[in-house]
Structure formats: structure tokens, C-alpha cells
Image 1 (tube, one colour):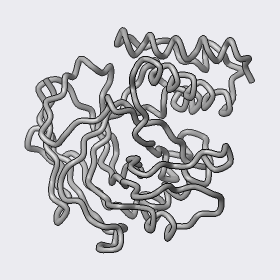
Image 2 (tube, rainbow, N blue to C red; image 1 turned 45 degrees about the vertical axis):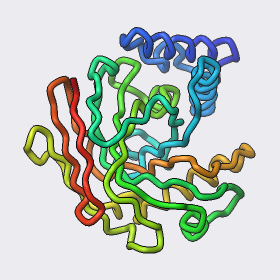
Image 3 (cartoon, helix red, strand yellow; image 1 turned 120 degrees about the vertical axis):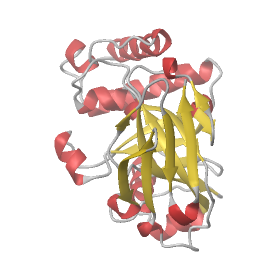
Length: 260
């Protein structure tokens, strides 16, 4: 474990790295004694500073939803980060690549809550009942630290959350089988990745079950209107200035964006 001052120093360093677009040394190297609990505390300090500066929390993202990624990160469960209003982009957006250091795209589904979701021992049915609609999404992940990273680095760095784009067709959660949403991700006209949403813990709502139960331990309830990125069902695709992206979700429509 590390002390309160060290946690604050780590959060400040990550804030500066984001501002400068210059990655810092891995926080796990600077403070090798840090643990998972420290990482989430650093993430909370980072979030509080961003909110104090004018940002607004609009949801959460869930990462490490596949067993393969958990094994690679030496984790036995997913992780989570916070979504802020200045991370949101509309379908068709032209996004400045200079905002990021090492941007990569992941294909996901976003759940938008129609009512609060909280309490322990929640199930998929609780999540579906609380969800107003589900929509296609792309998450942009980025690193504010050097690589390779330990899991403590990723969590402290807001679980690599950097931006997100939503688009396509919104659906009510009971109107489609959310396990079998397929998607392809094309970069500059070439398909780079494809996947199906069941790759997210067997059902994309399972990631949100995990998140709600995890936060309930700390007395936190997910709020109505919040956006919840359920987890990626493709591998990350690297992008840079000049790239044009098209994600095809079949019956749920598509998302397009470009990087300038």
C-alpha cells in the first residue's frame, strides 16, 4: 500500500500527463508497493480533480471482460473507469488525434440507464430492467503512462478510458438478444476486427452486473441517464491522424468517424 500523499502525487502526475500529451513513467515503477486498492483511490482522485475543473461524470466503462485479458493482466475479475462528458463524440465526428498519445479503438455496446441501479447481488435481469436502451459504441482507449503496464497502472489511469463514440440504432434491451450482436471494424476501407457481443462474459449485461455489485460495496449507485460501456468484443485497433473508421453493427446500424 502507499500513503495518501503518494496517491495524490500519482493522480497529479496522471493529470499532467493528460494535459501535456506526454506519458509518464508507470506509477507501479514509481511506487512499486502500490496495490489495486491504491489504484482505484488514485482514479477517484483523478476524477475528482477533473470534475473540479468543470468535467461531469456521465457513466462508467468496464474493461478486462474476457478471461484471456484477465489472465494476461493477472486479474481474476474485470476493472472499471469513469466516463466524463468531454470524452463523448457523436457519430461522424472528426477527432483530433493529437488529443491522445497512443489511441486504439474497441467495439462495444453502451447501456443507458433509465433508472438508478444499485444494491448487492444484482442479476442480468436487474440490469435489463434498469436499462432504457442499448446502442452501438466505439471506445477510444489511451495510455497516459509508458508501457508495458501492470494492472495497477491501467486502473490508476482510469482503466485506459479516453473517449467514446455512439451511433447506429438504439434498441430496448428486451427487444433483441444482446448476446448475438455482431460487428465489424474497418479502418480505411479494410476490415481489421470482427466479433460478437457474447464474447463479453457470455452476455454484455454481465459486465454491468459486475460493476453495479462492485460499486455497491462502496455505497455507490449507478445513476439514471448514465452511459455504461459494457466491454469490448474485439481486440484493440491502433489509429492515427488520417484514418477513417467504419463500424458495422448489422441490424443495429453503423458508426463512422475520422482522425485528423
